[in-house]
Image 1 (cartoon, rainbow over the protein chains, first blue to last red):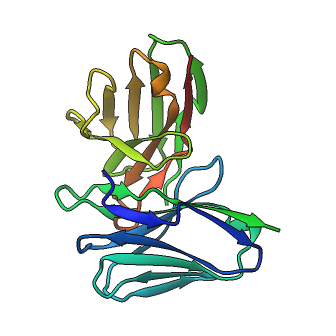
Image 2 (image 1 turned 60 degrees about the vertical axis):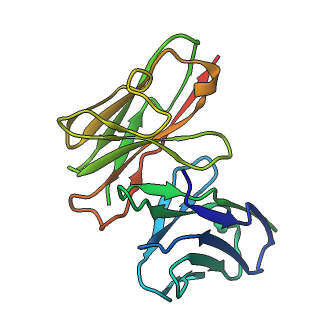
Image 3 (image 1 turned 30 degrees about the horizontal axis):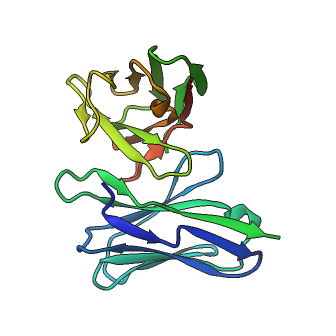
Length: 111
Length: 116
């Protein structure tokens, strides 16, 4: 089952605005991954965070791993229509190192 | 990266029948997985397809219902047996390892299954 809580479930954003989606765990994580799934598409790997406090950027996307390695965030600046989709965080289960996906944040953009 | 194809891309089936989904990768990979994604939901791992041995199933999924084959390092099949409308879902294969970025999973395009 899911080991992480993802919020919000839905995010309606005006084009050009910023937003953030969060992924929270009750336990310390070894690492965390983020995937994007466009409507009608399949999940595509975005990034993996490993180090405490790590911050990585991909153009308008900023990924952060918390100092305690229990939470992560994805911040998108100047949202564009190409950002539409569902963003999933995923963590490795401690017992067998298989991926467990969060519930996802579905993003829609108002032009 | 890896290029993954799945067949069929979609199908509409009658209850009680079975459907076999194929997953083909363009390179040898260590790990192959099968997921189910119901509409508007997250991904649920069904099983890990092991080359040369029986698949490893997640809680709630059994071999009789979802038999899996993996004859080599580039190919796997998932069969959805004795289907019911509750099996309507998108089925995705994913791969990891063997020349791919560490821990990164690549997903196939999915098979959209509707059971009437």
